[in-house]
Length: 187
Image (tube, rainbow, N blue to C red; front, side, top):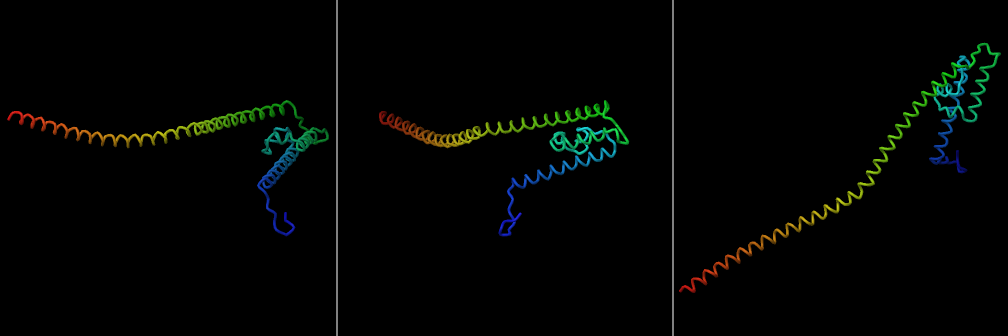
């Protein structure tokens, strides 16, 4: 794709993603068609679930419009009486479909439980992060208050020491005065 000036057009991420998805869809639908041809050639009984398994695509895709018709056509073609090898899809085919469906259900349940566990953990981490932010703020505030209290404590201890020194000096001075007074009166 080019602009009028001959410069290549820049694609947006959305366009790139859309093109990628379309390409992947075409490749998956081609894989389904290849498997249908191979199953017809091998005479392998065709079912929607078997086709999905062999093509390694979701069962949703084989039931989607366009692909569903191809699978149904292949099933009909396989059941036609003019085929040289006729293998009708009977009880065994249904049992196989049921077994495959059960396996898929088991896998999907396990995936669902894994996703639930991951979601619980992610939500728990988010809740922890939400609840720790106020705690961190409170801890920071309390650390500041503790630093102020320590500084005040140090200042008060210095004042106590100074006052004790003053008190000691006053007592010494008082004793001296009392002694002098006593010696003056005794003379």
